[in-house]
Image 1 (spheres, one colour):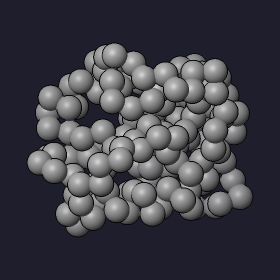
Image 2 (cartoon, rainbow, N blue to C red; image 1 turned 180 degrees about the horizontal axis):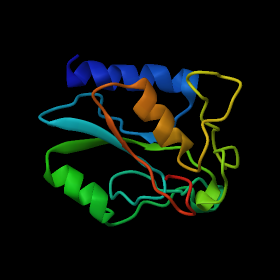
Image 3 (spheres, rainbow, N blue to C red; image 1 turned 135 degrees about the vertical axis):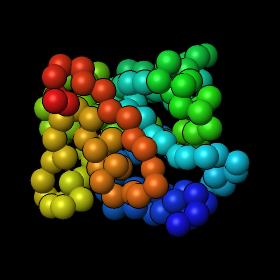
Image 4 (cartoon, rainbow, N blue to C red; image 1 turned 30 degrees about the horizontal axis):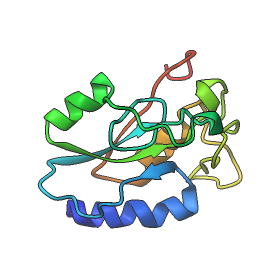
Length: 140
């Protein structure tokens, strides 16, 4: 699957699984070596960062988190910020100010952990990396 195909698939499956809070408007993979998404509490200078809270809606950081910088420097393209529990406080990704990500294996169940959007994205989309963060021990 080409990276442009992966970009198209990301947008299509997001409608069903609600894993992304924000996505890039650029639908071309360009010269990226790989595509990645990040939990919405990792800052990115070119995409809104809300940490799952409407309080931060519209916040556009002026810097990238170290992990995002390193992935970009390695040739990665950030394609989206994933839904999460508000400020990482929750255990099932059901306490978001935005969308609640859906479990791809059982749509009526939670993804689990505050990084549910990242877990869903990693599960549903091949040829894609998704960063999650363990705020309070939800990733073991």
